[in-house]
Length: 533
Image (cartoon, one colour):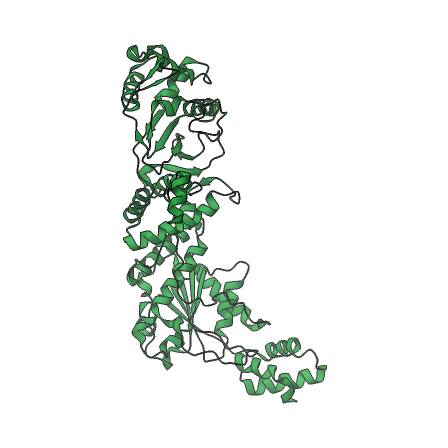
């Protein structure tokens, strides 16, 4: 009751309380409507600016089109079903915070347009408002001026301007004083021919959507242009609202909101369990493996096989090879996926042999998420889906390889996906729920895309992809070789630097004898070198 009494005394309601952000959100929502319209190629919008770096009065929302045309929008909002009248447009101070201002709404637009016209080959000026157009006449200057209903005046003005060949052709016989008042607000434009051009490009759009209706309109566009559900469009609108923190504040690097910025703002990184797929190779990387790496890279570049299969018994270092291939400065690998957490001798626990990593949904969602990061700034160019959630599994696969192939074509280089840990998926129990059956037959992989897969020998598993057991020309198998005594010596020299040369030699010999060329065994032995002496 107290709040209602206060509101009554102060002259406002909860809806009209001063300081509410409705006018700001309304202005931004008008901008968002045009921003989302960029998803429609027929709009030919090059970029949109909110609070653009142009003359005041024209800066609320600015749209620039591919042909160079510019649309300046001045946004006016009301929360009380107000009207906009002839007087609102030509009177000084009424619509402005500064009551001493000598510039009316029309005068401000005319002045700003005149200063900007030389910078734009073709520009239009819009007054965009949810206010209802005034339909009543009024008197001004103590009855000296009879101001006509704005709706009737604007219709007549549009008709006269469209037919006029010169500014002097525009005549209002029944509203001479009102027309004189209107023309006085064009004094900032010196030439009559420029005044006519300004009026031809001035548009007053009244009775526009409310703030709530604008939001619904934006969501409808998102649903239509991105083929998403109403629920997803609501999420995407939230992403757009969040982007305003960058687009409308001083932290922005540029006022221009392009289609790529829009796509980046809309893109959703699916809420899958986040695993580390950016593993670095364990040091030292054995010298004997460098030739092995080199041969794989040659086959990626020049080979005709679409799948390169790295086979090796447990502990041979398959994961480290994948990591080395991926972390080189000139790496050919674009995206990689580890289906398990590698064993680390420095950790007290052994990671789970099978985890969520092997599930097909996690697998393809993660690949698409990585693809979005890789193509940041080019998401619209490659039509990367803004969300995985409205794609079926088969669609996720198709989209991944479509985008990968287009990206490879543009840069004239093979796109490479590396997957490590096939055997972990094979040991998961329910194979149909893993990514294994979803790996494409090499025959259907695009010619400019290759996959490196790594896992234990296929002879030990019968539930690898069926095509891995066929004698296919599209698959090349590599058996990971044992590490050499020289590799073990290097490992001992790096890890056991507190030993003297004799002890280093003895430890190296013992490891070479018992590790059997196995990488993981050698690393674990080296970690416990003191027990070997």
